[in-house]
Length: 317
Picture 1 (cartoon, one colour):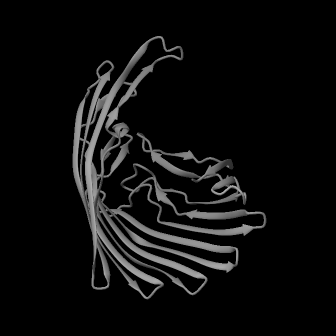
Picture 2: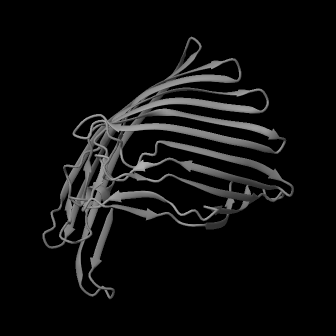
Picture 3: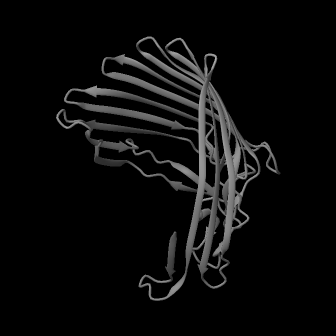
């Protein structure tokens, strides 16, 4: 349940509008597994219903309700090869209901309404891969995947609302690798290559917006004297199309490289207690992880935070 009121001035003396929203979701999930030959077979299914009701309090507001009913399922197989390597495959149906803020506008400007025509995202997901330990030092994994979606939800800057997209497909490969370079140090590296494109509609063959074509990550996990652990890391993200640029006419949102470091200390006498410090975007890189084409067709970017420091404590019990 959510109750919202909004006003036209800081003193909040004159209410301009608001909303009372209720969303009720009920569902069930069942999963089972067995062994057939030398493989572990798993099957699962989910049934879910979500009902949204919105009472909107503003001049010209259009309240109403929206109901979504979806099912999901998956089938998986895993086979162990020796003691160190296993291979697997999985296929299944996936879905995502619209968030309340995607389906209901309650921010004024004469646009308060329930978009009952906004559908749930749904699709089919396939993946296969292997993972294993090779000797005392090396661990590696490799996965190939394909995700076929329809009715993905995205912001339409021209109509000032969320809408469902034409059918899309994402496919690619992910690889992860780690190498123990010393008794208390391990190098980690990972790479993901993704091709994301529209497979139907007027933009068939065009890139899906905000879907980077690659991601590379490297890190080093070190255990230092005094129960101190240090983990520097670097992430490279490839370029992508601007949000809303379905025809791919607005150019590219640049990729970027960001370095970070995480340092933690675990006192020997306090089991489960950790003190940490972290620096994100250590080199104060100027970049943007999101950008959109506005209603006039101009590309707008949202700057990401600069160098950021965090500190805190964790307690596990």
